[in-house]
Length: 233
Image 1 (spheres, rainbow, N blue to C red):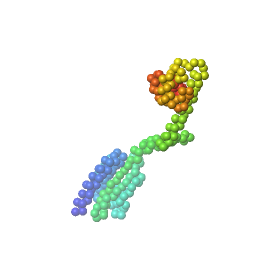
Image 2: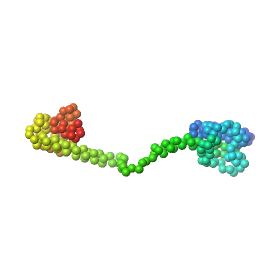
Image 3: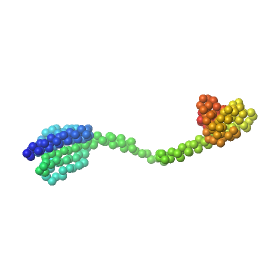
């Protein structure tokens, strides 16, 4: 009855080893040891990274569990290596039957060399060079930054428009199409929609009517000139 129970346990453990191997492929080798037959202990091996074969003998840990029923059931994350020198992180899990005797062990061997290049790449990717540059990426400051941009644009526009209007009113007769005399339609609608006074600028942006006409290459001459200087057109 005891032998039958052990065989059933080993069959179930073989399924577990297969599932673990498929889950952690290709980084982890999973080996099932039958400790009731230590000379031919390896019963199954998934993701064979060590080059061992089914039917080979148990390792030192397997023999230790056979000799000492009080040997720890789980030994995790200990340093190990394959025959060719590759570094390995291993975990060994001893399995007892109903009588409390060790009958099997599942060993997981993770090949660390597979992660070496990835670790180096991540270190390089996350490296930060020392710099005196300061930048705020907080979304809460978006309104403040937008206001700074508006203030800068308004200053630039007002200076450009003041210079343009001044150059037309300081000389002789304004050129045809200018805001002071020869473009009443643009003057009236632009001043109304853009809230620009007829003798100076009291608002930051070009009036709505002139802006629409500027997009079609038209508009009054004053606002055309201002748009070019201020970078609107």
